[in-house]
Image (cartoon, rainbow, N blue to C red; front, side, top):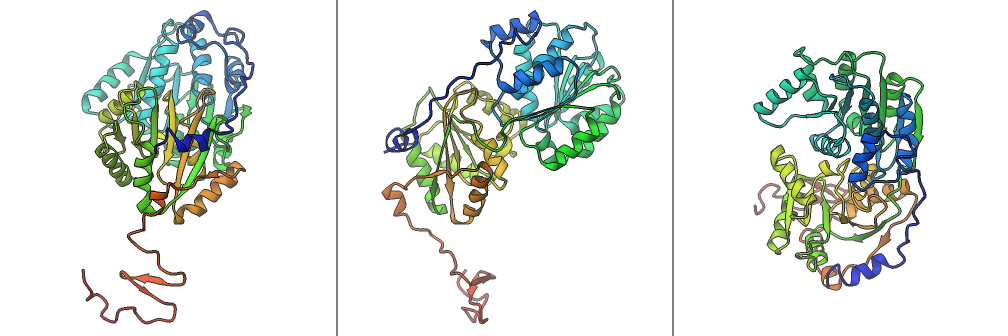
Length: 438
C-alpha cells in the first residue's frame, strides 16, 4: 500500500484550508507599465506580504533588511522595484549587483529576471564558476560592454574585478540574497572585498531567511538607516503538513520505496528527497531507479552543466523524483513540488525549514516527511523547539517494522575501540585484539 492510500489519509486528515489574504495589486504598488506588463504576461496580479512591505521602501531608495521564511516571494520583492528604478534611467552601465551564495541561485534569479524584464530594455548577466574557460571569456566580454544587472557568486566576481575591466563606478544598487547562507559559507571577507570596489553612495538591500546575530552585526556595517521587515522565520508555511517516521537505518530505503511505489509515471506531481551526504544521495537514487521510478540526483560531484540539466528537467516535469543534498534547500524555486522527504534529519534546525519550504510555495499545499533514526532524535527535538510545535509521528507499515538492524547499537555504558566493544571496567571483550576475523 503506497503513499496514495493509507499515508495520505493520515497526513491530509484535518489539513487546514488556507484563506487567501487580501493584498495590494502590483499596479497599486506603483510599478511602471513595462514591469506590470511582464507581470501580467506571467499571470501575477497581487503581491505577497513581503512584497507589499518591501517594494515601496525600495522604490523610495531606502536601504532595507528583510527577513522572511522561504517561499514567501523574497526574490520578486527586490527584482521588481529594481527593474522599476532601472527603467526610469536609460543609461547603459552596471546599475545593480545581486550577490548570491550558489551557482544554482544565480541561474534561477537570472531566469526570473528574463520574465519580469521581458518588456523593459534592461539587461542582466549571471556570473558564476564551475564552467569552462569559454564561459569566463563570455562573461568578460559582457562585463566590458556593460549589463544593467549582475547576478554573481562572490568568488567568480572577485576574479573579474581584480582584472580591472569591470566598470562598476556608477552602480546604484547592491543586493545580498540569502545573506545568512553566504555568511555560513564563509563569504563575509569576499563580500567586504567586493564592497570596497563599489561607490560609497548606493542603495543596499539585504534579504535573509534567518536573522542570527552575525547578520544583524554585518547589516550595521553596510546598511544606512535601513527599513526593517521581518516575518515569522522559524515556522514552515501553513500549507505544509508535516509528519515523521521513527526508523533505524536499515528501514529507511525499504520505507521510502514502499511510500513511492504507487507514484510511478505520475506526471502531475514532483517529489524532492533530501539527504545530508553525497553517498546517501547516490545510494537512494540507485535504489529508486532499480524500482522503476523516474529519478535523478543532484550533488557536488556533478558538473555544473549536468546539475542545470537535471534541475531543468525536474522543473518541466520530465523528472518526477529528485534526490539532492542541501545544495537545493535554499533559494531554488520549483513550482508544484508536492512532497518533500527528509531521508535524514539536517544538522541545522534552520535547514529543516528551508528543506520543507520547497513544497507548499505560493500558498499551495504540500507534505513533508522526515525519517528519524535514534542518533537524530536530539536534532529533531531542536527543530520542534525552533518551530514551537510537535510534529505528528506516523506508525511504520507492519512489514517495515519487522526489518531488523544489521548492526546492533552497543549497550549503554559500553565504549567502542578498534572495532571491539568493551565495558566500563576495562578488559577487552576479545583478548586477541586485532586477530579476530576480518
